[in-house]
Image 1 (cartoon, rainbow, N blue to C red):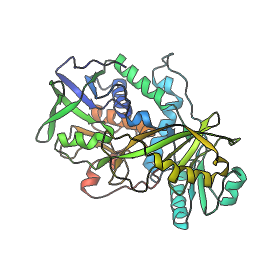
Image 2 (image 1 turned 90 degrees about the vertical axis):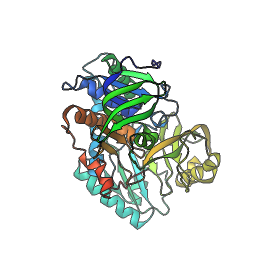
Image 3 (image 1 turned 30 degrees about the vertical axis):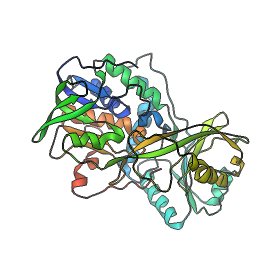
Length: 402
């Protein structure tokens, strides 16, 4: 997609730094909000999105979280996805989408891990999720291909959990936001002007300084860099996550749930006798923002070994493609940081999703648009995820991180 390099104006009501899934969701929801009639500038450093977390995502959704708010966020995504055309004003160009609900299966390899699944199950069921707890015998009855040695308990939900077409939703957010007047440019914010408790401008790499009413930090794993331009600290770092797509010599005759092994390796159905696996090394430092090199030893040393042990008929597989992407990891509590900074009210965070950003993007974009338009949330209250919990050292720890 081709964007112009420079803005058409010198002043905007909202400048969104980052045009990937979060920035584009916010831009679209702003244009869809009848109480907002301002000008929007989206600044995207790489319009190809080649290395964006949005592009490297496995594009799945789940309701199996340990915090009720995260369950509710996914539930809105389900509603939005299944009614995409209606949300887009009945536009006949917009396709009908659905979820391929093969489900997530968490496997606990210890009693302490099983207790976490039990606690999470209570949260999920109270929020309306269809999660079930399964004994090893019950897992074996449903999915006889697993080797369940060492497994104490499983947790699964096959209703509205699985693959969804995040790329298509992303494309329509960009397209419709631009058609409605949101301006996208291929550029980079290199400085933010701040006067006391407000940000006032954003300076671009091409030299222009843009006045603004709000700045939205939607810059993914680079979010801490963006925050520092405004003199703010943000506990968000990139973390490399590796993905492999492989073909099995003996495919499983049913859809494979997205299986989260106690080793941390996960594997799921991909279609046509192929499967998608993911993992990361035991030593997991923050990489350079431009480091997307594959760790080729990881497949042989950890990932394939874990998969073949858990699913013996996957001993004979052939890797078809592989890539490395970045999580925007919130090192404070692995949950979103959204909303205004307590001392800089017009600098808005949209950061730190720790691997579950794509599935939360509809609710997050809607919430950010509501805050800008109204100064409060009108649908789902996300104040619990505001930045002030960091200043107060009150983490909301998300235990169900993959």
